[in-house]
Length: 168
Image (cartoon, rainbow, N blue to C red):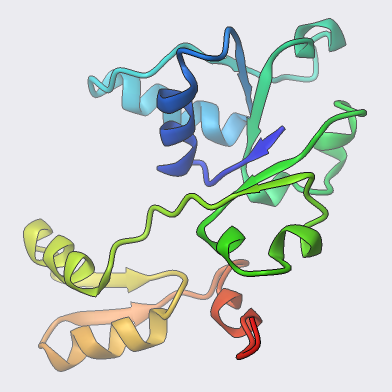
């Protein structure tokens, strides 16, 4: 079982593991993003959506990818026993794998650096920007100072930057 964000990180995993894995089973949130990307020409390996009707035998020798929000949920109990891998840039921070009760942590980040974020905003021509995690209030404030309408949207993952202590 690998946990990865539904858009971006999940597709990186699928693409990079496609030659090593015979079968991918995915959570509905990842399946929905996958279908949209396929419709827009992305070359991604096939996946199977996990439904209540998916037999337990289908899980054998498959890599299951789910969003972080599935961790510890009733949705995940159907896979017991399983090994849990968390795919996040936060796995670079000492202790995060243990805090997430993961068997393995994979430091995979899809975040851009400051110049990359600014270039992405400029390239889109966006008139309004919403920052959702990381240093979102700082980023939104900077964009406002540059004349763009910008704001911060609080999400379940918005406290990540506060979780890092000086010792870590």
